[in-house]
Length: 318
Image (cartoon, rainbow, N blue to C red):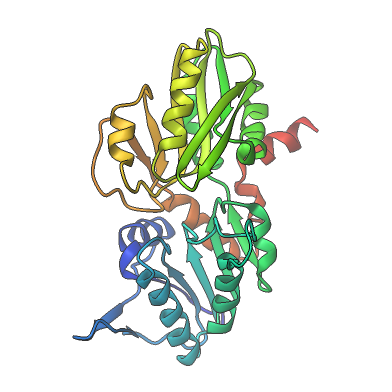
């Protein structure tokens, strides 16, 4: 007898899990998060999941209660004899702590990879990790989805002339280069130096943007300091317009103020994290259909790489 797919959600990603389950073609599973007066919580699956393929949707952005919820859900599913447990983590928090960049610090993303495995996850499905090599921190399979499957069709509909793509820092060059290659467009780099976290000391543009409509691409928009400074510098260097595409809208601190008062024409983000407030400059694209398709392909043992638009274009041109 074929195991059944059941999709459940933690409290932080219920809005997205509803979209995913609807796109998949079934109702979201019944799971209650019981809360206690001292702040503790306990997930309770309100339906039988024995032997089922269980997909648990929860982004692990701040506060860390979101991560703890996911871990407890994984543990509860394992103890309820779920057949196969996949942690669907649209935004994988702590991913920026992926190396020892100074003495005596933790590598949080590796620790969390270990904890997810120990809790009982058989697989992880996520999108646009801050560094793709974080997949190697896991000893279980990782499905790493690419937001270009959502961003590229949107950019195509904009029908922008004189298009140039820009990386807001050196770390994002590979991501931006692939999208630029898809469109057959040029790419420039905004090289930055930091004084400390969230504070930029200096920035310069490598490449020519004179008369170009520039699209910045990054994985995370946190305080929006890098994006807005990059946009201002690109305009100073002669860009006709600047818009930005960022997968995960962390948007902390003065982010909304920075965006609303910037030269950016538009900031396009995914719904991996809910917006704290609205802005006329921010457009949100849904990841629901992409995750639903990835869940179906996983269940049916089909390819996940078929969902990567820029990879498909490379294969056709090979």
